[in-house]
Each structure stands twice: as structure tokens, then as C-alpha cells.
Amino acid sequence: MSAREIVSAEGIDVFYGTSQILFGLSLSVSEGQTMALLGRNGAGKSTTMKALAGIAPPRTGRIRVLGREVQGARPHRIARAGLGFVPEDRQVFPEHTVEDNLIIAAKKGPAGQDHWNLARIYEMLPLLEPLKNRMAGNLSGGEQQMLTIARTLMGNPVALLLDEPSEGLAPVIVERIGALIRKLRDMGVTVLLAEQNMHFCLGIASHATVIDKGQIVYRDSIEALRKDETVKSRYLAL
Image: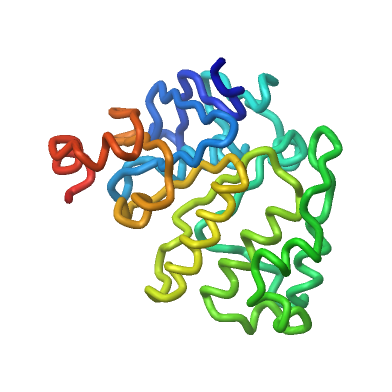
């Protein structure tokens, strides 16, 4: 029996003004998968994530969350449908405390799920608890990244969209982010992870999708990608 499809895109075209960025793009992420969306800088990874989250709505095509079509819906409606989006630029509320940032985002999932609360967040991300009364704007980049992931989890999403979570962070923080994503994977959390750094994904993701020039060019397990030198050299510059 195949796993339930959580989020999917079918034949989506996305434009910024008159410039087309995605060309008939289709992908799907099933329950419990940690899917790496890999590609060079400018390949369309972030646009794909923004399209799914409703920030860059597709001009054509369909997007489904738990089988329900959501293309054209406002971002907050898509969030309520179950997609939790962590943008690459983090976007914390800088003049609120860490704990306020978490509380602001607290809600039940689309079926009333209430797995994530403050106690569980502090258990999963213990570095945040000592910082709970600090203004989010005074955190380091790595601490803000952890906070943004935690804040998104407080919304009890059915799938977590992580856009370039390792971008611009010190190696020790990248390791912590990787360890957190592995924990989420082992808990069965569904994750779509957009990354340029394939090496970061090798020990984290279960599956890989490669995007190039706004189109999907490869889909397989992460282990198959690890062995495919042709795909890596052609599309990932490795």
C-alpha cells in the first residue's frame, strides 16, 4: 500500500512579471518522506516553495494539500490547510521575544492536531529555552533559523517546507539544523527541503528531486542520486 500523498504540484507555471520561472512543474511528497529539492542557484527551488505556500501563485496548474486543491488561495489559507513554510530569510518578529514568536504561531492542525506546543518545542530544540525571553532580533542567524523552524512547527503542519535552511550559516549550526531535520524525519514528519548543498541532504533526505531551469529533471531515492554521477555533474555541479 503506497503512502498517502500530502502535497503535490501538477503542471504549474509561475511567472514574476513577464518572466517565466517554472515550466509545467510537477512534484509530490508522500506522508513521512523527507524530500530534497535540489538544484543550482537560480534553478527555481525557492519559487517552487513559494508557489506551494501561495506566495508566488501559479498562473496555470494545480496544487493540492491532502487532496484538496489550494492553488489561488491566500497564503494564510494554505497554512491553515496544513503547509508550514520556513523561508530562506527567516523573518522573525525582531521586537518580540523568542517565546512570543512561538506563541504567535500556535494553532491546531487541519484535523485538530495538537502535537506541537511550547514544552515539546523546548524539548526538541533545547537551545531555545534559555533564550525564551530574548528579543528575536538579538539572536544570531543560526538561532533565528532554529526559531523560525520551531515557530512553523507550532502551527502543527502536515508538511514542513524548508527553503535553504543551511544557507549562510556556520558549519556547527548547519550540523545542528541537520540533526533537527533527522529527528523530524525519524518522527515521521513530512518535509520538503529545498537545498543547493547536496552533501547536506545526503544524510537527511529519503528522496531527491532535481530541478533545472524551472523543470523537474530527476526523481529517485537519495541513495540512487548519491550513485548517479551523470545527474550530479550535469545538474548539481558536483
